[in-house]
Length: 298
Image (cartoon, helix red, strand yellow):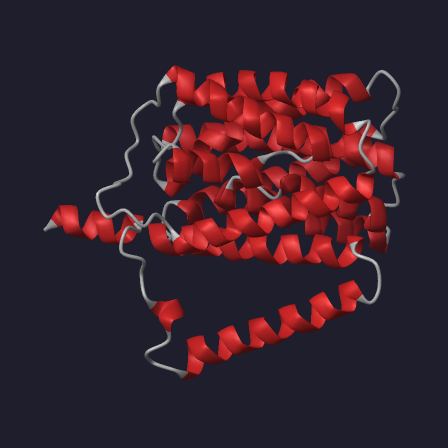
């Protein structure tokens, strides 16, 4: 087995772990792996990523469902609305320069990540895992689909916050439900790409199998990691990806300034976390799911 293929399969396990644990991140990881490691051209990589992410999300969704962490009605309605929104976003995105779209997407990722890290401020806004009102799900699905259609991303980075922050679902259920949405949108997009792109199905199958193995591990971890830690971890992951995209898209020297600033902030945060006992980063937000759950238990 060539070294590059072995490396691509090894890295593909991370795709599944990301999807199974966080309910997102699949497309952002898959496209670079297929492009820079497996050697696919960009269009083939995007099409292949839709199959890899779609299949892995579908399998992982079943795993989450067996653990009662999927709201099927909410996921199916959100997915259908998201597909409609994505179609409109795709039409609009063709008229907007790619760099502007990516910068806007990265800024949105940063804003979303900060909201996830901070959590809900309202102490009475407790999480719940009941099915959400259909109208609310449709509106959120259309908006998220429109945005993901504009930038061509899978949508997990937006679906999970929409379900957790706006819908009030707990993070494990938001993660499981988002996988249903991602699978629906990925296979819909794949159908369009296969009209013009031919894939190496042996390679795609190998990457998919490795990602599915990783998804089992991610799904197991999702049920064991505390709610607040999972939410904050997701937020920091999205923040890092948003900064990375900005660094790639901004012209020099703006990207260098961003890189230095982000590194300094990260170093200061790490120093605060590990060296200062009273670091504000250690404190659980008043309205976080962990605090709410503890309060309800008492």
